[in-house]
Amino acid sequence: MKKTYVFAMASLLLAAVSCSDDDSNNGPEVVTVTPDPTEEVSLNPDDVSDGIIISNGTQVPGDAPAPTGTLPFSLSETTQSGFQKNGFDINFTAPTNYAGAYIQLQSADGTMADEYWNVTGPNRSNNKAKTLFGKSKNQSKNQDVEIDIDFEDTVSPGTFCYLICIYDTEGNISQPVEVCVEVEAWGGNPNLVGTWNLTKEEITYAGETDTDIVGEETCDSSTVTCNNDTSLTIDDAYCYTINLAKITFNADGTLSETYNESTKDFNYSETVENCQASYFDEEEYAYAATGYWAYDEEESSLTLVIFNETINGDPATYENGDAYSITLEEVTSTTFTVNDPGEEAIRSFFTRQ
Image 1 (cartoon, rainbow, N blue to C red):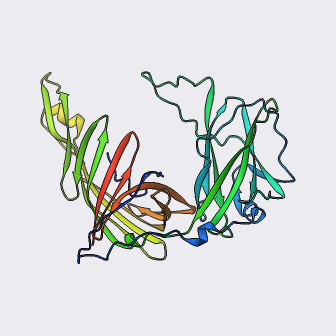
Image 2: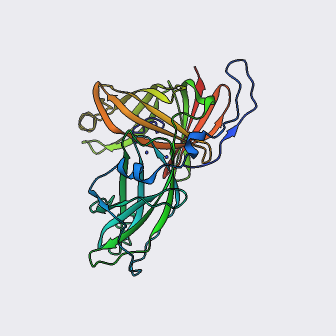
Image 3: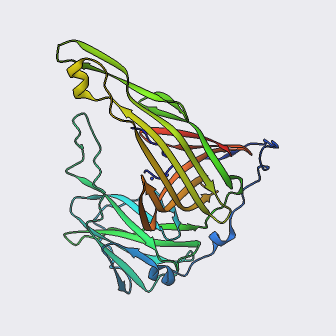
């Protein structure tokens, strides 16, 4: 069952923002987004190194071991965003005998921290690229690794860099790669401040696009073979309705969001027995969350960091937040559009309340 990806059921840095000149009286005038100067402050590498949390990571005094140069290693991006409390992730592909990584922080001017981090396995995502039979072509050669780095409260907006190299079980150490991080301030785009209601979503998969409109039922069909060997096609076999989807961006960088959906599925066993469509009771999915938002004006990326959520009355708390990013495609005084790319790409359209 599809769920709206603008809300925290999933994780997004990506395209350019387009600001309209719409000066409608129905909303505030669209203003130019300017960089936050606090994000340009060069952070002390020792302070940041003491303020990060890495699972399976140990802080070691001195410089990281020298590379042997016999282990290939590269990163697809050498600049990235970080978020207060939530931190950032390091993702790369490593050989199967990968054993760990050395990470040493430095300031933008190259001043190194007095210590480094030794991060051992198994910080691995183990994602496998699917082929026709669901196996990875490179399964025997490589593995995907993710190192999750969280921040203590002491890490504030600003910039720093780090050097990272990996090592294997045979003691080989790669050459280091330098990556620079900008820790985003909360908020950042005054045009988004306010409460917005989702109006529709466009879901594109395998070249086909479906449109879901809030308040209208969406159904998929199913054909079954009954016990009397006849076929029955059920046009409304699987149905759902987005009843409400709302998000509020506050000027201080806090956010709240609400999502409500109703679903109705047919009862297979009763349907094939009687050769007449039979249904389970309608179910409701209710989601609410609070957290923070950050806008990266350089990447035109909107990131939501959720710290508290409730699903069907069951609360959950994320100490360092659950972050995901989306592309802000367009914003006017009364509407904005976001895009969550991927295998199932979703464009979501909002109007100001």
